[in-house]
Image (cartoon, rainbow, N blue to C red; front, side, top):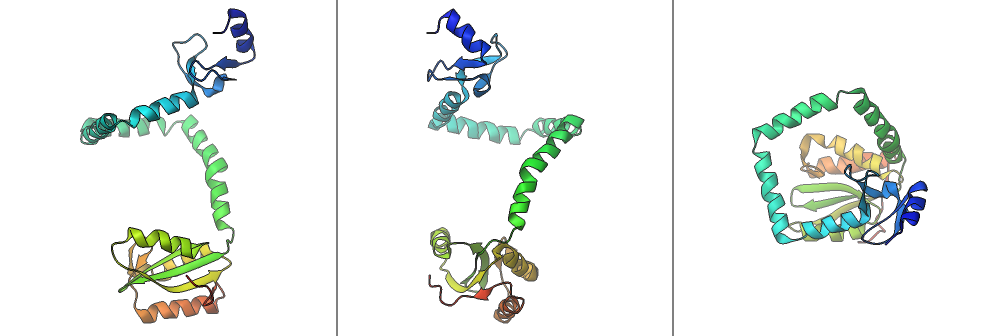
Length: 214
């Protein structure tokens, strides 16, 4: 228990002591609570997060959240409120400035990172007349992850080593977009797929690596 003198000294430094873990942390790491004199709760964010996780892990609590969300999705008033909220808040200058800041600091760097050539592999999996075209830096691990998830057997048809796996995959996806089934799954003819792989070799987007064994 902190004395009044110690509490005032911590308050002047912008620090606070958590009532659960006992650690002294900056006030910004505490849960906000307008009812408190300093505007922050006595529990830090980490302790409150652990408390919420333990509470939501209980089966009855999980069932309650599931039923509540189901009832809310079926309520027309909920969707009317969501539309009104978007019209009221997402058109304000503050929201637009926040969106621009998020794009500049988070989205744009991620896009620039994806645009950089990344070496890796483009794999072509076959299951009957269906083909999956994806990328991975470790094809053996990726294949071991995919096989248990699918209800049908698959086999590795081609493996392409390339210095720009994202660009090669996009090129192949765009070329087979007319026969796309879902996501990375396609249904081209065998001649069309072989012609596409030959064009990848000619354009030097990558090369078939027969030496790599799964």
